[in-house]
Length: 153
Image 1: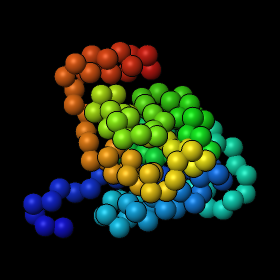
Image 2: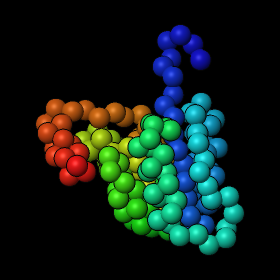
Image 3: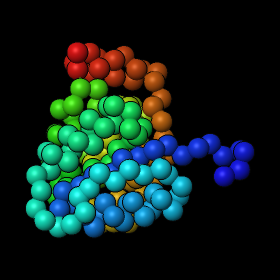
Image 4: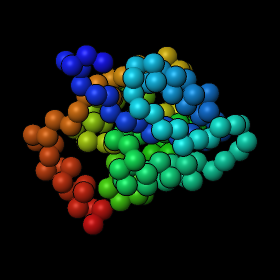
């Protein structure tokens, strides 16, 4: 890393058995780009309940273990629901470039989720890159995000 490059953010990754291949692909993709990656599993195709993994990643993120998270299950919906149950965490299911950008830029979502049965690995890599290359823009979105934060209290 040169002195002009900023350090990469830390990213937590998690999946259920349906998302294992995509999670492993994203881990390789992020590691190759210099991101600090924490893989919370799973590590094999034995069936596992997605709420356990989604909540675990969200709790670790809320505790500061990493700055952003990516979760993968069959549709991405279940993981988003599980992660959103943890106070202070906002998760968005992402399937297109605009949502990947706005998840962080407008909603300050710390977690994105993917459906491994919905999108392919190259799309997941592209959407991950879009998400991680953007930041919360504040502005007119700041009061809305503050209202979301108030709902957690």
